[in-house]
Image 1 (cartoon, rainbow, N blue to C red):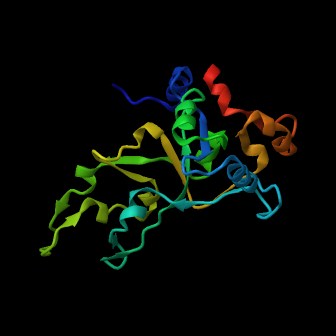
Image 2 (image 1 turned 45 degrees about the vertical axis):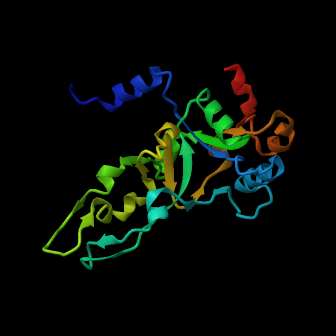
Length: 223
C-alpha cells in the first residue's frame, strides 16, 4: 500500500467517526476529590485570580520512566548517567462520545479541550505504548559483564511519552497525548470548558463571543 499523503490522511480522519481533532484534559475525581476542589483546580488552570499572569496547565511526572527511574545512556559522556525527563501534561484524543467512558471511569466533571493541531504546534505527541518484552529486551554490549536493556538507550526526549504494556497495565484505550513541561496558553485557544451546567454562569466570565464553549459532561448520556 503506498504511503498516505497528509491531505488524504486528514480527509480519512475527518470521515472516521472514531477520530477526534480534540485533545482533552480532564480533572479526575476518582481519588475522592470533591466537586469544589475540582472546580478550584480548573479555575487555577484558567488563572481566574491572576496567580500565573496567564492560563497554565502544570506538568507532572508521567509515564514509565517516571515510575522506573532507570539508568540512561548519555551519548556525550558515553556513560550511563544520563538524566531522565518525564514531566508532561496529559490529554486524551477521545471523541465527545468517547469522553463518556473517561467521565464514568474517573468521575470527571471538569476539564478543558484544545484543537489537536494547536497542541501539536506546542509540542504535543501521542504516547508511545511499548510492550514490556520490547522495552525490557536485554543484551550485552562492548564485552560488559552485565546486561543492558532497550530502555537504557531510548533518548531522553522521548521519555515523557513512554508507557509500558504488560498483563497488569495497558493504557492504550486512553488514546493519550502529552505535552512535555508546563503548557502556557491563551483563553482564546481553548475550544471547550467542561463543567456542570449550574457552573456555567461562573465560567462564562472568561468567554468572549460565546467562546470557549461551555459543555456539561453529563450531556454525553444523550450522545
